[in-house]
Length: 273
Image (cartoon, rainbow, N blue to C red; front, side, top):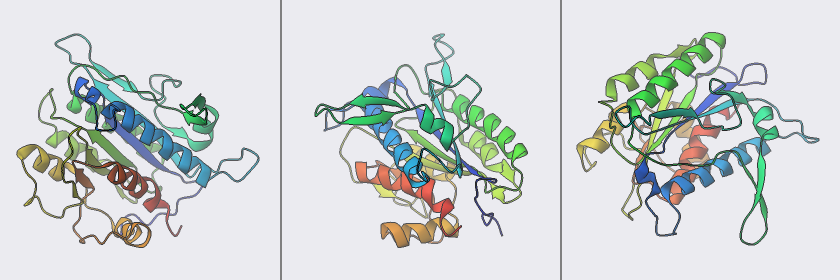
């Protein structure tokens, strides 16, 4: 059985966020925020919450996770292709970082009410959607990680996008990413579609029959089936009843869906361990 390895400080798991920062992520939501701003805020809130969960006091952070962020935007044709480390404080190849290091790299900013909050990730959205190159980079990063952590719970990739790939069909590359594995199982790839328009979301489907277009069906096929641990977490902690074949995919996600999606992706793997 896969996805049974104990997650400990000596044997952490990995969470890799793969984020589309193409120009359409500048589209404004009803709140007035751009999609890129909203995703960045949600990611920063998630990092803050995860770090707080493993803060044992006196700035001692238990490193149950290594976390990375890869962003993609631009195009080769325009000469502005950028597939980058989303942690702008880290080196170009230093993708995966333990919680304790991430905690030490936070920047404090103030909101309109003067309340301080931590920031690790800041968005800059432009150009096309080189999804294939983003997935390829994720595969390279996690192939190295899995080789160095063969006994560990396998990595989870949370891919956030609002548009179709502009550098080719991504499905076969997604399949290659999902073949990367530790002894405890293959990489889990979850896809989250966001858009600026208000529309009814489709959450964690088990078939593509209700999905509205070829693009949504493609993202569905690219997404991993939830392991039982994740389905149990969704039921026990989020009161969501999912089919056994439910996939890690949300189409037209709302704000609440994004928070829940991050919860499932970052917390379910650590439950009952």
